[in-house]
Length: 71
Image (cartoon, rainbow, N blue to C red; front, side, top):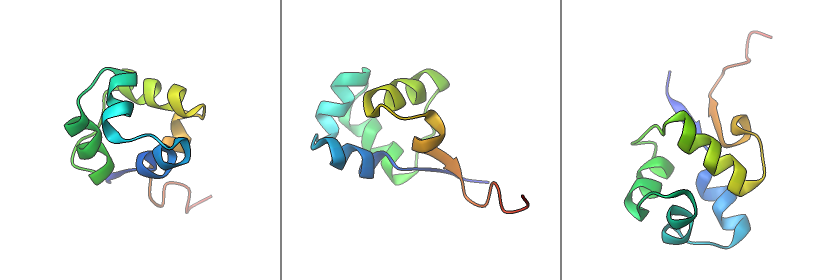
């Protein structure tokens, strides 16, 4: 089951670019780009850092599609 994310949407709300977000969480612009495309699943630590920057829960940033369909 793929991991989906809202990084691009949340980054746009803050009006910051990939480089700025990368600097804020200690990774490269390329890593942010790969996360946004779904080509890279971040570590738990990086996921938590991103959620902190966006001031939301980790589950708001990262989710599994259909995760709660059975509920």
